[in-house]
Length: 275
Image 1 (cartoon, helix red, strand yellow):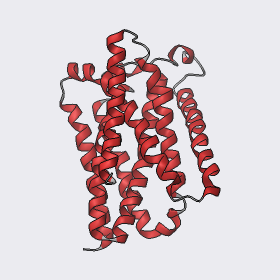
Image 2 (spheres, rainbow, N blue to C red; image 1 turned 180 degrees about the horizontal axis):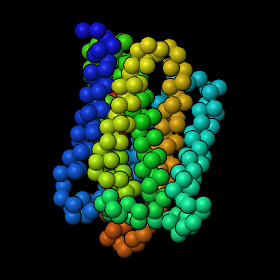
Image 3 (tube, rainbow, N blue to C red; image 1 turned 90 degrees about the vertical axis):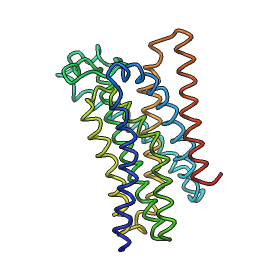
């Protein structure tokens, strides 16, 4: 079978598997989804931060020469500031000449609403969903590049790498799906955008097949941008929503679930890398 066909098949499999796992969330009854979703947000915070600090950022500096360290660190900083600006633009876009923007700036609801209730979600929550799509697309694109690079080295290595990437992505995609529902997207739209973001894996694989040499030097910068997007979403958009409930039981649950998200990503990362 032609190598390009294999790359397309296995990058698509990785995306489909992760989206299918996320879609299982749809099978829960509405009442249970609303009860589970706040816990999913806590878990997603841990997963996003672990992916950024344990997975992406180390990869940014692994093969980079020391003289690039400052530029790569600057890319992470620029990415965080850039996503702040992007979120501002997304918020302004949903405002009518500045009306009601102040009132909605800090509204981050815990429970997903139906389509006719989407107007009650804060603009910050909606823009958080948009940012997670952007960040996930960048991350998936890089995954596609990595899978293609493995296939170009050895077919068996490519197959193993694609399965490992799928296993690594599943918990993050579940968290991303929870964030989209939390941000006010309907079930259908959340599923559609998850699928759309997963297709960037295929795009990354195909582009890497044709121009891997050109993309190789850009890879650390793409990883840095993906890391900055996950850091910004977790710290600026999701963590503040957890402070709306301050009772001891809820706070302990939040801490435990954040730690669980970190632990799962770190464990999967270790298994993938044989550590």
